[in-house]
Image (tube, rainbow, N blue to C red; front, side, top):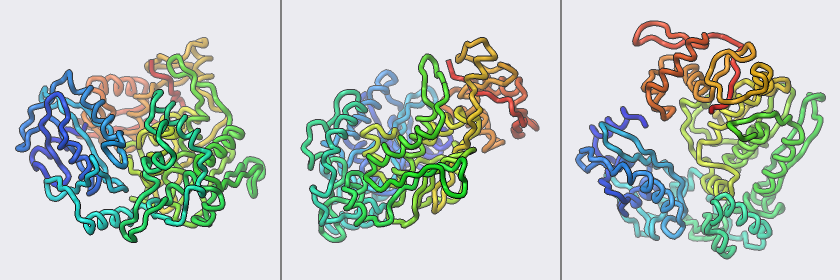
Length: 490
């Protein structure tokens, strides 16, 4: 939690993007109305435990976890929110008071709460009922998200309804044994997922582009998106052409399966143990790259998406509606769904997790897979570049250095290498991106206290990985080394 941002909000007071809510042991209805209005307008921040005048009163500390759990359940309930939302409230402390922060991004959808649409006007949540006003909201959203374009002549017969039994099973398993989609008829499931809607610009209703891309028959996808395909290539020996090729032109659910199978066929699966659990680094990295290129692609573009495996790297690239130009790092990461409906569908069936987690996992596991950080480049063509090194295996190096005992290390020399845990690697990445970062900011970014940050910094300094130049307002320098070896956190 950025406490400086919170204190600034207290000074400014409630605005079109800031809302204070007094909360006892439960979350009141008006909080959900604000979530709905923020989603429909510019997004914003809700602080539970603050009076309208900015006085911090807090929420009951023992009730905060259940409040968060109930909040997440409510916004994911299609009987309350349509379409449903996925937000991640944060419990934090301020002057010994417990508070809850809810960041609500602007959505690509027009959301309703209890079948009523709310908009944010100044510092108030306003119920919208006039057809013209609702139409304007839909038009504003549709200018941003092409996945919402309605195709009134696409019918149920044009969709792969044979995939829905698998979709229900995936959603059920992902939800821990029970999901609303299990018992919904086909049409109700598609409406619940936001794949059938009314276009208020034309007055027509029907299946939208997201429905066609997720579940459309191949011939329907070709008609709607003639340029759509993902070209998967292996260029390790014949770099001028390819060693192997797969052209994928089917729905996104089966596209992911085909591309993932192609990746597992051509990439080494390196041994890795995290705690007591073995994880497939290959599967994690390939999965995140492929899900990203399918989920956040701009499907109105004719640019041909690619998944390419080379000797020293693999990469995906796809058309993109860029929010800025340049590299994405852990420091400037600001999750933003390019196709919220497709992203939500993928999250429901377990193909992806919460927004932004895929990028964080790529930085973590991509580094473990090859010893080098991946690159994320935001531009009109979005790219993820993952370095490859078939000879690199930090687990093998650690095993040789400590007689087969892996994991649980907290730094130090192992097998002639400097062994860093995940937290220290995260700190190192942040310092590389921002050499003037402070302990306080590091603590806020990592969600740990400053004393823990200090211990990690001391470990990094003792091992010669970093050094601090100057006094209080100095900066960090990363010592060039090829002896860094990540290990699992105990």
